Image 1: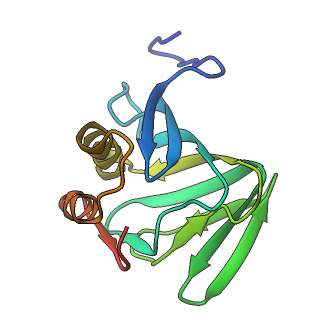
Image 2 (image 1 turned 30 degrees about the horizontal axis):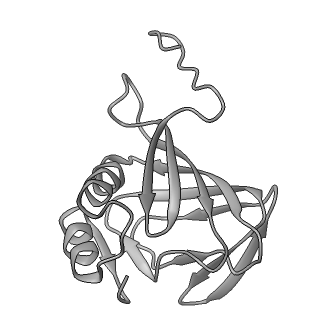
Length: 151
């Protein structure tokens, strides 16, 4: 249901992308009327996640729903489990991964989210779930994302 007053996205519904082995389900995007953010449900298989990177304009927050996600920054690592909240401000370097044996799931909100949304759409369209480091890096750079290690 979408109206001027509310957007309801039923469980399991939303635009799906496969980004660096992680399933993204877009719940609300900056393209939606009056949305000033991107909201995603992500599911990460064991031993997956993007390498260290930074976003020029997008800040992210993760609310871990299931499993455990390890967040790495230049200052060290923190582990977030179900119910934990992690904020990653724009410009900061970070990586996140599922180092566990079961899938991890999180609600991720990216603000303002336009650059990330455009990157996710383009990389999914171009690579169809594959990981091609040069293509990932070049595409990310055009959307204000700098990988500090190869994808």
